[in-house]
Length: 312
Image (tube, rainbow, N blue to C red; front, side, top):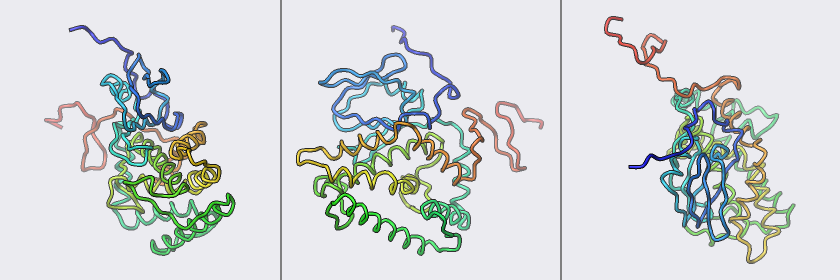
């Protein structure tokens, strides 16, 4: 058997931080392969080479063929791989995370498992949306009501600003075409935003399913985090695209490209990382040890791994 030649696997501390990466790349009806530490994407238009370590999340749409070697290098570089439906409006699965540490996961699980701390985190999430307002005493019912009113008002304001007809948020997960143009743009942009948030969450080793506001779904925390940015990102974007859309436009593609362009400078991903640290009460300069394995001890201090403790 011939030896497989390829680039040396990078250590986790050598990889770009998640906040320094391109937000997401969506691919459909193409073949993906590998050259050294890059992937190649080829379709009828030609071949594009992309360094894996700069990609936050690779979204694989219908008609995509990807080689085992490509998946291998994407896993080695900590790039999240997400399999999605047509136009990226349905989510199927994702690959491995960048971090091997459970530090943030343990903190997340601890906070969400206690009613008081869970409510504290949920209030922090709502406080990030209601600037200069004290929501520390509001119940979840009151917070949901205020958030619902805020989003409805925002929809109306954007509809008036861009002169787009608006009745309500209306979409069917399995029938993208059944919605009007603005709802289609919202759906496509939101799913791309979910992919980016999911990418950052799993890259940091956290659970996408342990939500503080949303619950009962394997992406509850993804929806929690994405909701923090819709008012600034996807809602204005969708209405502006709907205002300019022509009959033959692929509104889903336009929404994904427009959201990607908004994230090219990396500030959004940096903000997601910073906000996750804030919500979990982690200082910004606190680093995650990527490959540290320890043994849990009931005395409060973990023990080193790889030592014989027969006569401790």
